[in-house]
Length: 50
Image (cartoon, rainbow, N blue to C red):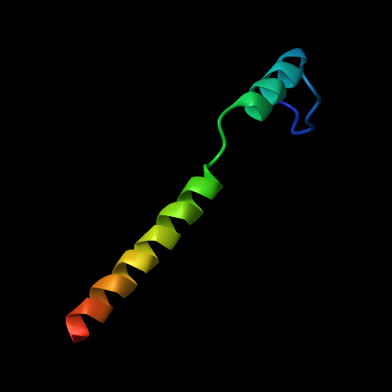
């Protein structure tokens, strides 16, 4: 059975560099879509009341 103690491996630094450069979640775009969606729904409800 292998030891349960973790020791850094040579490939770990390469993996960490790749993860830092990888695309992250587009939070500004998500926030923009939500804001536009709220505005559109508000306009639809306001015109539905007229």
